[in-house]
Image (cartoon, rainbow, N blue to C red; front, side):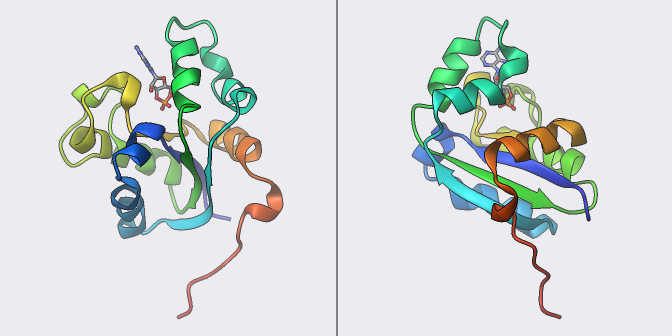
Length: 144
Ligand code: CMP
């Protein structure tokens, strides 16, 4: 199996009508979508997702904001998916992200940074398990 990563379009991007623009960039690059759901995440799920940040001063605000509206949770597959999808997203801080990246093009605020991407293969595996059941991951190949 090729490498997989977990991406999540955040409530600010959904609210601003950016879902299609964001998905398009990962499709165009050549990654394969293997799972996607549109959900208003529970506080419990978001706390688990961000458990490593529990001691950060912005943690409570982050969890509250991420639960303020729906998100698009996705699994994307392809060679080097974790690092390359992070490169497509740009830096965590949109102000430091180059034009041409998702955050560089669509945001100026670190607390409203458009889309989450797993930072390692281990994190990706943990996040995919947290957000999706095994049977929600679609096994498919493009017709040749
Ligand atoms: P994300 O990729 O979802 O992973 C952790 C999130 O915490 C990050 O994107 C930011 O949205 C948020 N974050 C990181 N640093 C700060 C900060 N200094 N202030 C507010 N939010 C932050």
